Image 1 (tube, one colour):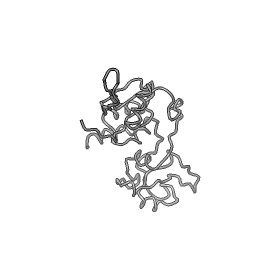
Image 2 (cartoon, helix red, strand yellow):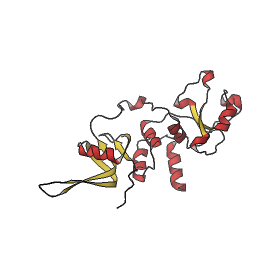
Image 3 (cartoon, helix red, strand yellow):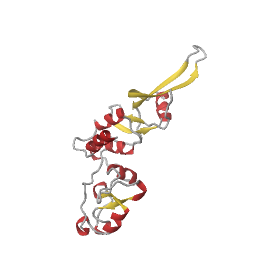
Image 4 (cartoon, one colour):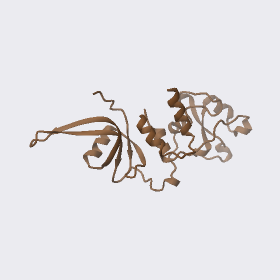
Length: 203
């Protein structure tokens, strides 16, 4: 069986809330330390270890696509209702589907930029609710103006992702079972639901 060792494993807490993405090596380490409470999803890897000198049996660790772990987490997400994920261009562009929210065209990441809907020069904040993805041409044309001042229509309302949405936005090559698991934790009103359904239809 051929494995893609770049495939990420979705890590959750004991209650099944998504935490982050980990590599297969990190997942094996969690199994080795006895931190994996349960796993679900498809089998991704079967990692073979050493041979027991007494029994002659070789140790085997099966790594599934989703693992629930105990112990300390990388971050504290106990108060998820007020959690605000860190703002970075990579996840911002993913939130907006790599579309310029002014001209509506899809661009490569290198052709995109972060635009402040209300410019910083007009007391606009560098926050999820005030930034959108814009192609460099539209951003340059808008300059230090609001969309209304520049006569530009904003195609979608910016929003702050929940933690589950943020985990989704940071994922690479998300598997179907991982996608379904994450979607179950999105708010019912999340704009990402429609985008995911559309991408499934056309991919």
